[in-house]
Structures are given as structure tokens and as C-alpha cells.
Image (cartoon, rainbow, N blue to C red; front, side, top):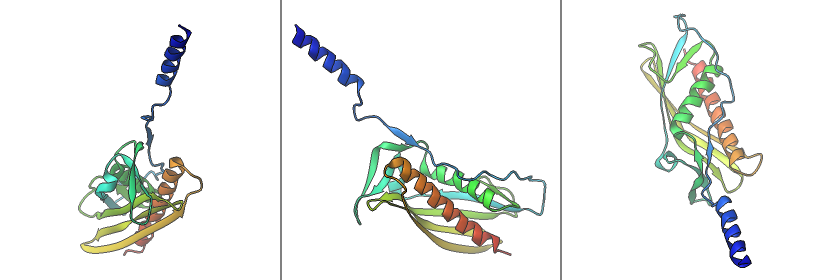
Length: 188
């Protein structure tokens, strides 16, 4: 009888413990605070972030991790809290809003005098050597003129684990947006 009771208690305890199906959800932190701007000023430059496109391997829910120079794995239990392309677009709008004072930056069309920015992200993942990669290219339509630039940011993670990887990816994305903002401020 004691054997059965011990087995029942063990089974109950194992049912309560982690079954390996526990999922953790991640959201990119916004490292900067958006600048409040009035839309009433006609002298402000306008920028519509039309889209942030990502490749299929990043379009799923799982965080991507490069395991060798040619292999990637997609996490099953470490997932994005919302679609990655939406997170990248929202944080890009927030970052550019803070980095471009005097500009109105939006994820919605603003009018006929707006610049239009599209970003194609080709890499947004952790890597086996403890680095994170944020790469791609952006395309700006400025007064009918097309400007295209690549970006590549490689950062060393400060710690191990997915939390540190997501924070490092967010920092890399912020650096990519700083590069975009720097180019935009030089436009006539």
C-alpha cells in the first residue's frame, strides 16, 4: 500500500513540475522615449515607416539562433510575444521619433509631403559565439529620389540566455535606427 501511495505522490508531483512545454514570451524593449511632437507645425519633416519586412525564418513565433556557420534553429519555448515584424516597426518608429527632433515619424501615412521608409531585415538572431546579428537594408523615397543603404550590427551579448539575447538584439536594432537617422538628417 505504501508503494502505491509513494507512486501516486510521485506522479502528482511530476505532473505539477515543468513538463518542458513551458513557454517564455519576449517583447523588444524600447530603449528611448518618443519625443512628443505637434502635427500642426507645417515646417516639420514627415516620415512614414511603411514596412519592416523579415525573411520566413524570422516570421514564426520562435526566436532564431545560429548554431553553426550554416545552421539555424528556431526556439520552440522562447517565443516573440507579438509578430517580430510589428515589434521591429513599432520600435523603429519610437527610436526614430526620439532620434529625429523636428520630424513627425509614423507607422501610418502622413500626407503627400512625407518621406517613405521601407526596411528589409535579413538577420535578427543570436549566434553560437555569443554575438547577436542585426542586418538588412533600408530604402527611402525622399522627394521622388530613392536612397538605399545596407546595415549590419554585430554585438557581443553581455550574458548568456535568451533574455540577454533579446536585449542585445534590441540594442543592435537601436544602433541600426541611429544609422538611418544619421542619413536622414543629412538630406536636403
